[in-house]
Length: 357
Image 1 (cartoon, rainbow, N blue to C red):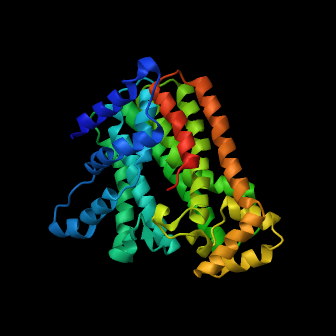
Image 2: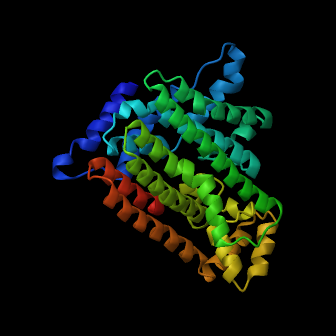
């Protein structure tokens, strides 16, 4: 399927049931379009001028991107564009740019965390070596703005605005990552839930929710009110997405997450569950001991999770994420005109907090 056929298929699927007000669920949307949108995203990965450039750079990152997961970020960019009445084909370069940023972030994140698995496969720094993996992550970052700048379909004013969004998104994500890594490095256990929310909003919510939705609305020629409504919706649901990701790492299954199960404990991550437990558990000292020891023994990891469960921290985090999405959905329904695309975005919030992988 060509890129044009993919985008036309998305448009038709979202609007074919408009008369009866029936729409795809977000999970159905991902399942149906993730493979073809992944192919579209990969069209924006260039080839080298020397064969060894492909061997040491473009081929590995292309293969990495082909194992690309749900592709929810480019797909919500398209949905936001449609929700404001825009032409979904115009959003392709921006959607690809955000996915390239995601690729870069994951490669660098796995290096920082000394992770072993990503999407069920060995991490890039293990298969290609640390130096080449860092370089491939840098390539992903370089593709972000260039993908949009070189798009002949976008006018200059739109390019400037979209690239500004991408620049701000990159900085905020790096700021959040700095907090996440720095707290672990310095053995900080004085982190509050409010501190965590700042970190996770910067590290995840902007690039996993707010910016894809805002950019989709910008390219779709939405009003300023529509753009900011979708941005705020993305901030709330993107934060819920991160909280659910944290929960899955602790109480999901190793098979469903396809990455290092309970690695957040080994890495001493200050998740919402952890910081709540540190404030509320009578076994705080034992939890700190486990978080500080880079523990991988299953029984000890199970013990840490039990401490968090006993403190009510897992229920607290789950409830916080569900409340975030409930309020966000009501705001979106109030501010964005009814359409199948809006219904899809409402469904997105439920998927963010109920997904199993």
